[in-house]
Image 1 (cartoon, helix red, strand yellow):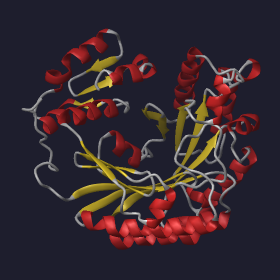
Image 2: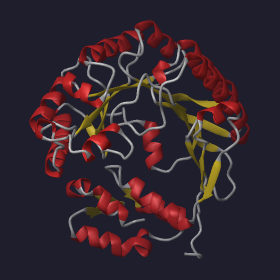
Image 3: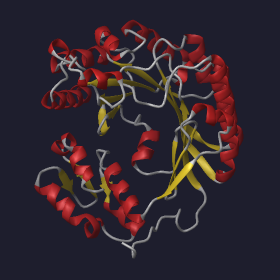
Image 4: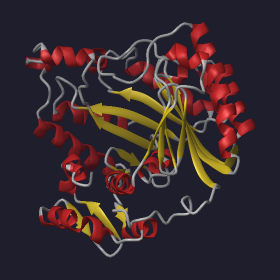
Length: 394
């Protein structure tokens, strides 16, 4: 692999171009039963101290990117909507002061029902947030209770209505399928309930539940509590729910543009598309990751340490060409359009077939990949077995 070089503008010394920002807000009212994210409850004083540390990191890190244009900003968590309107405004003002923001920049903020009233949402909108991602997860109150969510369906309806009254027009709704006790029949009812919303959401993110080690759900699974009416859906049921999701959303005008994401035309999430296309992004806040050129960075994960020194404790990893190639393939294959042969050649100076010809032929033969003149992409069957396909490119 030593004769393969990166041929993109970044490697040739170009310091300008696009940059995305991700800001991690690690606070929530309480941890959900399935959650293994870096998040948890905190006092108001701790939250304020964190916001101040985050603003300091924004200021210092921006010196490295004076020529970059910020094309998307994402406030994720945790529950970013636990922040007061004043705190969100101070973060956004700090970003505007220290970075160059593109006209029409997509600025997303995650919001959980039960954590933001109309006045707060209006203030977020005035601060520059123009896309809201609401963590519904389920439209069934019993499922919400089993997940450990703090809200119920009526709470979601309230925040959804308030979001539109506050001015938001680009709203995503998060859903989780394959919850213990769920069946394809009950999942279909949930989808139809959410699809009846007026006005319609512009975007849906729909993920199958993965029970992660260290979570209360993991303990329940290993102690045999998920039995009978609370049985974990089988793999076949999980895939049936996945196919049902695509069918119903397509019937309502949503296009699936990525394995887990569906949008009305023109409302694809630019920030997430940037991740899958390996665009540079800067992660700010505790535990956040960055991809800058061919280096990955990770911020420290201890909250007190970050508040005391938001600049120190960051680790880095220089990716090999083989690493970059693998990421180009398995991240790009998440997109329905797949990976572009021409882009691969322009970046690496070799054709996709020269590097991955055998792997591609294997999965084409098995009906998991489609190859045309421009792209390599997953088939419908390949979508079902995407992890298996992507692993072959690592």
